Amino acid sequence: TEMSSKALNELESARLLSSAGIQLVSSVVLTDCSDTILKETADKLGFPVVMKILSDDILHKTDMGCVQLNIRSVEDMDKAYRTIMTNAHKNAPDAKIQGILVQQMLPQGFEILLGVSTDPQFGQVIMVGLGGIYVELLKAVSMRVVPIEREDAQQMIDETPLKKACEGLRGVQYNREEIVEALLGLSRLCQEHPEIAEVDINPYILYGDGRKATGVDAMVVLNA
Image (cartoon, rainbow, N blue to C red):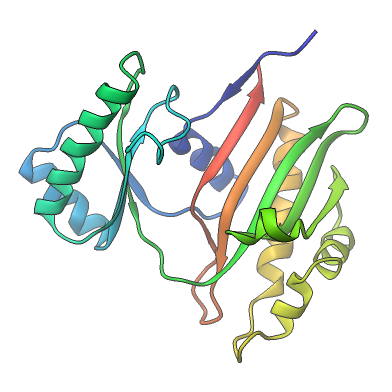
């Protein structure tokens, strides 16, 4: 029989992953769009921001018109809030809505993918590879069964184009150690939480300028 599973929302996913030392983009949940709250949020996050629906029932947020990018003022936040709510009610009338997630819109960097999947034979499997739009294109992903050691993490990087990126890409060097730490953190998290069935962090953005690597979209699925 299929085990039943539960997908955590983005906020819960972020909380779990940051406990493993994986930094995720700063975000705030809004449940109303009063001027005061919008201003406080803007002060906390800075512009530009992204806004998206927070709902366990709406998975394809973009298709549903429930994501607004590149918002640069409090007025635009207000407009985006109303647009997203309208689209959510129209396109997913039965969805339970927890609020609207406002996130910093991160600058460009080098995008990698971190993840966990469950293999019927071996259990939790950890993976790393190129992120963003290249995932589907190149399928350049390396995998290991949990738990992994530092040496495994190093080998995983060497098996993918990440190796070259860490040596230097267009004059920018990315910090290989940040990928190693993230992989070891994920491995530890899996051991502490055997109920984790799936983790998908894409993109996890590396910066070659001393800024800390940060994940943008994170999803965690637990076996219920």
